[in-house]
Image (cartoon, one colour):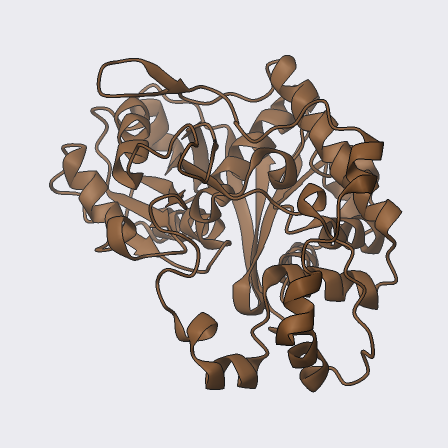
Length: 392
């Protein structure tokens, strides 16, 4: 059987802080309107959701809880965790079930409310155990980004230019209707948020240039020494990333509907893209943020495609350095990488990001009347996942 992406839904991305537009809604409340509008009365065989911080209000297999609350008491539900790449893997896992013939319709995506389950609040050994941290070199993601910039000899101006580009592209895309999200309401029916809240459309180059480095203090308080213990060849880490070139933390949920062509026809649905191939990769945990690129390169090699065969790359912007490196290493034109902005501009809601990228990728393929698109995300501990979408 062939797995197809049939449809998508996502919430807006709210700022992950107490005053953020979605901070008053629980992760389940973010999922509910998406599941009911996309799944409705369809015979959903499974709900597979990615979530990076599975504790508190995101614990207890939230996918099963959400499925049952949506009225699908016979739908199992599974929550998986490959850190920020979880949403990509949720989609590829759903596609595998379709291909195996064990399911006909699966909802796949993810959720992350950083407001309700803050990053690192699961008390994982990767973040809290000094022995594990020392053995693996578990540095902060921002330190890893600065390390990439150092190793790749990138300059502050290059990173700022990318930060400016993604802000302006995201603003133009929202203005021209190329982004769309399901509005989230409060208990009284009032719209809480209907757009990506973190967007800064009037950002200027001078403003970005004036921002101080964000991770210098972390480096001085032991993180740089931890890097050097694992990479003694690095004598000095150049701290170049700022809040303007780092992904904004966000609250959001996003889902896709994956199914067979026969099931789609039976229920009046239209296949939009074939889930053509998937790949995962792992790299040095200290550097960590290049795993998504390695997954893309692995995917291209396995399918025999050339980077130029891909019309659209939707890559989670795990800091500007990884994006600049990706574009340079694959020698792709900049109009094909995140053409409508990315997570630096609009927010990164860990588990939800993969499905958000899938929506953006398929929408853009249809706008361009193009064939192939790739989504990819890098995650903590040096993991990454990629997915090839072929437009129908």
